[in-house]
Image (cartoon, rainbow over all chains, first blue to last red; front, side, top):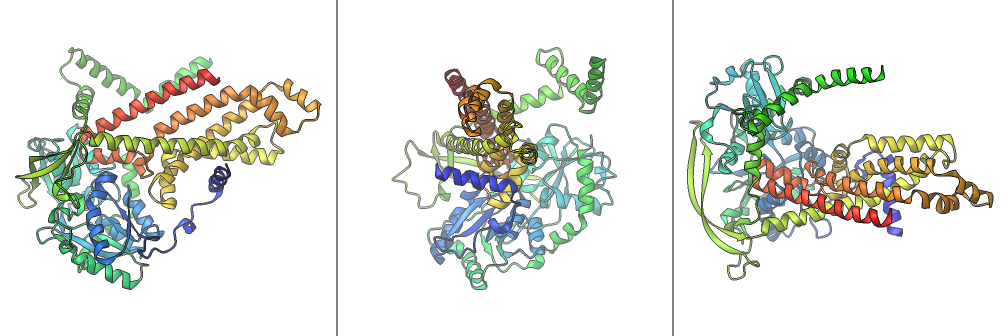
Length: 311
Length: 313
């Protein structure tokens, strides 16, 4: 009963207490009592258990080689992971490239490792249309209804908007309608159901849809491809001690050779099989994402959201 | 006159939320369903959704190569190993054409693995709803006391309490959960608190209104023999309002269960995260399993609540 009263009092206090970083836990050091808190985001969408299953073998291997302990949590939105990193709720996080740049520019995050697949660490965003639609390239998107995913997503929003801007199309003035669907899957679903003419999603998400039989690839065509986007990285909280950062980086660079690890257990972005992790990846590689992000001012995003609310 | 005004209001607002279009589309859908029309956007959409949700997913299939410390000699209960052929479609970034590669792989099949996983998540969802209701009742009792005009000590306390009750009710659970995950981290804490705050606003208001409208005669009788406010509340008000209190609380529990399935969308625990993740991974048969599980839970809970109400109210 006393316990209940205490929690009731705490809950009552919350109704008046503003959200403050004072709730944040003290600094983690990787010991059993204070494990390093890892915040994962299911890139392109994924479940809590599935995302954990993707990364747990990798972090377990790191634990075996370094003795550091990790506590894996799965977040839901890119925005929340950026805030989590900046509010000291996480020590290591898996970001989308655009949300990484956002956190990096706020001084909260720096690179830990980037997955390498067949020697490269890149993926692509695309714009898709129905195979029989009279849309051949970006310039034909003018006057069409377009679906985007999450406003903080690199490959279902940022890169498509920048492709439109590069083609001289103002996403607010020149599109018939904007639908912010919240995810890659929703964008594609809107296209398949004929609610929009063009859908924005990553190549990986589209491949997943084909694999699951959610869409017949014969009925869909790619009308535009983004420049190569750097893989969503694993990032370190900038406030971690330098020695710990170095230790983690060296452990990740050799994790594919760690004992008890099979090549199938090394997973990266979207649960895809990767060869290993590159810890020498330069921050400059993310400039391509940073430049695209710079095009997307808050003012433009605001106008896009406003248009998305129109009917 | 009043009726005319109400009709005009319905007409204007109905047009603004496209009720006319809804009626047309639904009508087309119904005509298509009974064969009087070839196709309709709605019937095609709904049929597509239904086709993809069924049959629902019961088993769990895990790639053997990805399981740590896999021991062939000791498989989990009822599980077996299968070899399957998987297609791995890739969109070639140079040609923009689909390319298919086929590979063989071994999978561990647990016949009711996914169902068990969904049930475990459903239990977590129920736990969130239960604790949210408990906290909501605890928070709303003092709120109700101060929000009842005849028990609140003064106007200021009354105003503050009413303000808090309204504030709690005004912020939707999903929005407060969105903010609470930033403070408490991803997981059930944020979900419990978000649901509890909203429900406290609801219960505070309804408890208070019942206390205000309770029959005054027994209260006067107790006051006449010198009973304090607490005693009057305990012996003259509570016995009167208890049936309604139980009914409200059960309703809040019911609502919390339904909402607890949703707060996972923003990462606040429960089955919602699994639901959204499976949807984004195009695993529609998994989504079907989850929806069936949610429906059965709400249905069973409704039956239990009906029994409780018959017994106590």
